[in-house]
Image 1 (cartoon, rainbow, N blue to C red):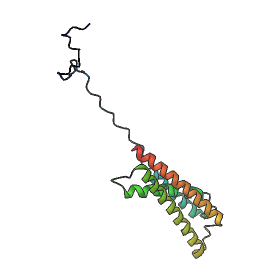
Image 2: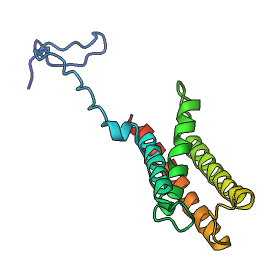
Image 3: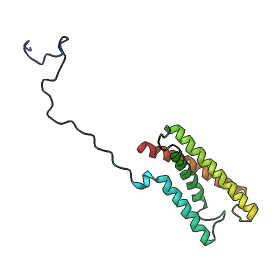
Image 4: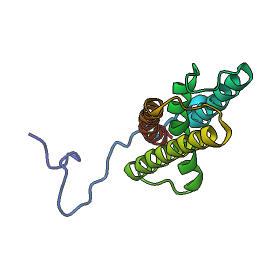
Length: 163
């Protein structure tokens, strides 16, 4: 049984508690988080650069058409990258919460994909460029673009949460 003079008989209601044996260890400082690699921090800009490279490679080779080997990749990456870049640029100082940002990125990506298909349609009819083979090609491009916009929205949210 402890004696009344033992200082470890705390807490007492009339005396505020203080630690009689303070820690001699200095407080641990939190380690700074590791910086994200360049490709992760600028993921969408890198993807958009890949789109421009893919389109640029197709024109000199004369293969920029609906059946171009890089066409599905361009239709996937362009809405994925561009929606995130536009949202990040518009809301540079005060980024929106995750769900509204994802909705904006996806909506902008799908809108830009539809505008891309309108440009292809206009190029076919005004300049006879043969960018579209038929409605099936257009639908596949739109489906791939919507999937790319959704992937861009998820990637945007993951990258913003990691920052």
